[in-house]
Image (cartoon, rainbow, N blue to C red; front, side):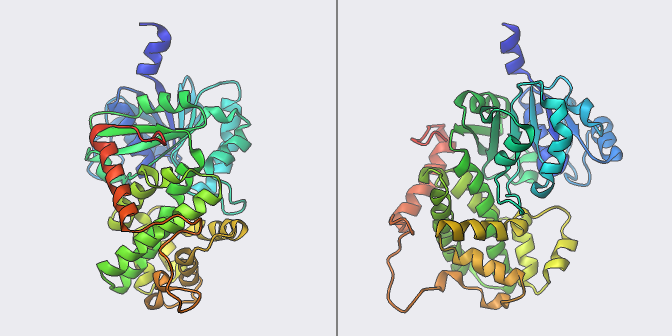
Length: 377
């Protein structure tokens, strides 16, 4: 085996950010054979991961692999790394990248975003912020997304994800590293669709949490999820994504997982809003960042610029601003008038029960037998 192939089989990776998802992804990589160094901001957290092989604050009860270590020194974390993964809150990414740039500017290592948000001030996707701040070839950048609730995966419950990069080679390199007996990765080259799928499902999950907190039942939630997929698809396609990506793991798959699980931070935030807590109270109660709360305003701004109507996200914003009683949220009922409307997206594509059923079947078959779709995920 050549040294290059050996490096590809057992890469040295750095993960910047030791929250629940960053630590879980480190476990995924380590269980797949990689040598993993986590970077934690707090020295005591780094020490616990390195010595006790635990991250008790974010993954209670989970034993981490022996091949995982950690440090609070950024330069130590990335030294000699073959791949660098970023898992910090989206609103602090740019600040973290300024510190990383001098450590990465003379390398050609892939940089992988594990984040699902957009920058509040600019509306940029995380891969765009990385490209700006690191000033690197976008073919080096990849993003990971899918139905990935951290604690379930840390418990080694089987799931799948998609790795997207403009470079097929980069996507496949990361996918080979990020797979093991309980975690399967697919690939595509639709970075826009993969990132927006991960962002937009958070907003729908906040809406589901709100109606759950109010006490509404499964009919209400099912209708919002279904129409939410339409909103997600319309928005993403209008901003350059491939429609098929939103029917795959990064869209529909992530939407199902995030909307139905109490482990979802965005669902939890929405539920607190539905129970009558104000925005600031919700933020105080959350142990970790709910990316959907910060993404609502910039997504609506982009939607307005793209001429895409997003009634679900608009009503979430009204609840967040205190302009709507959570009990009044019913975005799936909004119409311009009383004229019966076709169940179509803004782009003229039918999205009835048959289309949704086919999307569910497609996501299931991808995981069951690994068959690649025409979109490549």
